[in-house]
Amino acid sequence: MARPGGAAASAMTNEIEAAQREVIEEFSLFEDWMDRYQYLIDLGRRLPEFPEALRTEENRIRGCQSQVWFVAEQKEGRLLFRAISDAAIVSGLIALLLRLYSGRYPQEILDTPPDFVTALQLESHLSPTRSNGLSSMLRAIRGFATEALRAA
Image (cartoon, rainbow, N blue to C red):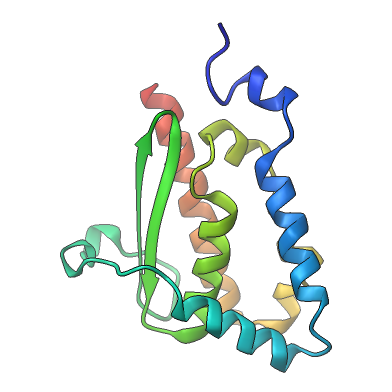
């Protein structure tokens, strides 16, 4: 029997790629970047509560100008992420990342490039510090996935 997230997962539709297509399609509905920023802010406002006890230095993402805390746990072979920021747009970026990567298999995370970043032109529309923060969060997600595979 194949390990979850291994070759069997590759044969199925890649959930992250499908989620990225949905996000790209949603963003295409907005005519300008002011509307997209507002959408990101609205997404961030809907993030679930993040316990104060998890807002530790150990869970803080380095490379973000704003405060960002990110935690991962593995359940039934999938990685579940929780995160929060003290900045509105960064919270929206977190909401996107959670939608794309939380509940996915570690190997799928590692095998799927974050094409949505280029498709949405985030690098050219985010400030350099927010863009660095997004890169740091993506690195952290990949790091959690790598650790989960090593532990398996």
